[in-house]
Amino acid sequence: MKETIKILVVDDERITLKNLEHILKKEGYTVKTTSTGQNALRLISREPFDIVLTDLKMEKVDGLQILKRVKETSPETEVIMITGYASVESAIEAMKHGAYHYLTKPFKIDEVRKVIREAAEKIMLKRENRQLKEKLDSLSDDIKIITQDPQMIRILDTAREIAPTDCNVLINGESGTGKELLARYIHNYSTRSDKPFLAINCGAFTEELLANELFGHEKGAFTGATFLKHGLIEMASGGTLFLDEITEMSPSMQVKLLRVIQEREFYRVGGRQPVKVDVRFIAATNRDIQDALESGHLRHDLYYRLNVVAFNLPPLSERKGDIPLLAYHFLKKYSNLMGKEVKDISEDVIKILTVYPFPGNVRELENIIERGVALCKGETLQVAHLPEDIRGYGIRTFRTSEGRIPSLEEQERNYILWVLNQVGGNKSEAARVLGIDRVSLWRKLKRYGIES
Image (cartoon, rainbow, N blue to C red; front, side, top):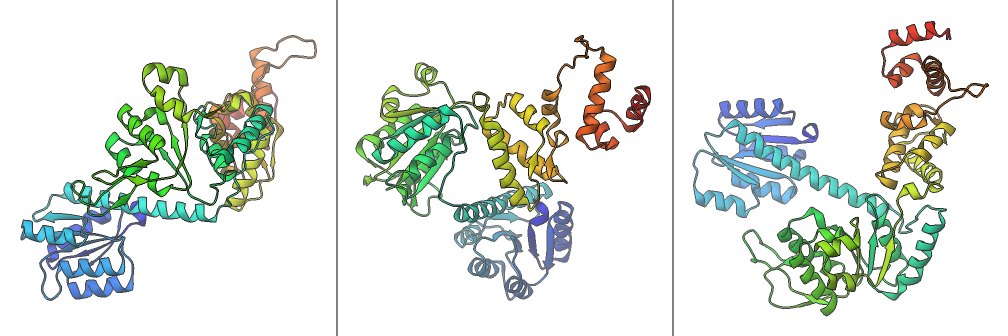
């Protein structure tokens, strides 16, 4: 992360400038320095910076002028003020104009590191969100669920039938089974398909933050609420809101959500006027529904409102016939994304994948194939490209032509031959797969008479 963060340091004290440059470069950031405000303005106009660390009190052009210029030309750049003339007034003035933080001299090195690290994390998060939005904008709206499994086909048929009815839906299934994908599928076949589809993981937020995300807030509702924020329920109006891990929502939040579903209105945090909305709710959980109701993780009244139509997604271990189909789908997807010519999957890989239990379900299979494509140098995905803990599922008991179970020595010889075959005879790679060094492998090959 640090290598991609570019910092400009502005301070008229040479010693401070040198110290800051040393600290930040040691942390791995790209750093430029200047001792005058005029030169800082020239640098800002010529090239982009992620963070500007500037002294507040300087001759001719001070830190506040630099802050204002940065926010005019590059609003996403974070500005951190440093001053030896600490005062509440100057701090408030800097914050009013968008400063990220305020440090006073003499500052502690650890404090500087912490503030810069937090600012850098904020910048990277913005970057990732922007890239994600660009990716989402480029994706087709045609949501495809790859399956030939009879149970999944029945689920998709039902999903298409109920999609136009506008009823609320509850989806149950293990993590990685595709609950959000099914929710998008329902949205795309509904009369709301041209309106927003928004999703939130209810288990990822505290109650206060979740309320803020769902309902938004009025300006001045709490300290730091400097503008009106529209919540996801309001933003999804006319469309669909997907509430993942609904059973992780606190009981009091469930009561508030129930009111929205019943009354089709809500109050922003700090608001006094109700906001009317028209939203279809699709909720999901990986918990056993009956257990969630009995333990109080899901209120009965909310359950009845959401459970108009229910879907139980089967784990991938119950969809063995889909594994090769999905594997080739992901192979094509990641070959195209990575610009590779990986076109096939070896028979041994398919055998291992169909035996493997997939605790992470479809998401885990996708990750395995993505990793394999990244490692593959030829046109076929081999066993050597699978994670080491999965390769063992391909080991089977060999029997001799007489029908007897072979000895451990015979089994080892056969397994070594099999691994060598999988890696195209590459002894270094075979040794790595076997978990031994090359010399040990050479000794075993000589012992078993495997010369080439």
